[in-house]
Length: 175
Image (cartoon, rainbow, N blue to C red; front, side):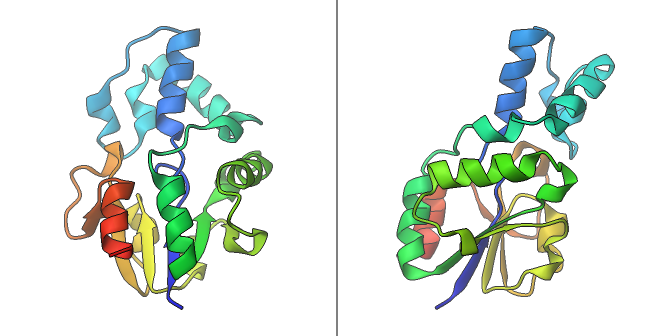
């Protein structure tokens, strides 16, 4: 059975829009989407609030209540019947996210077993036939077929096969 490595944040979970919603509710400030396209969406918030955004990312509970990326549950459930699926997240960058991410995954993707969930620091340790990720740093050293999942910070990136949404993923993996 072929193995598919799937990233979590900005691939099946939506931390950017959750952060934008939180920021608007609490601070109501302007967000510069153009700056978000440069690689880190944190820089799209007013500079005097970057520390607040980072504090929120590092706080317990942030990753527990993220919105689910449209169609990811249904497509991954079907893919799970055909492929060996692993959700791999570089979660140790945000230590409080570990429990949050596990709880989130068990809630929204109950068809995945605990052995299919890998929370790590460096994704170069994983191998498989396919990887779907929004960051080049994770795809760069992957030994299989690489798919760049479209996110605000990677719109200008070329040289990788793209998946723009989960319906496109279904066409690739379920046809």
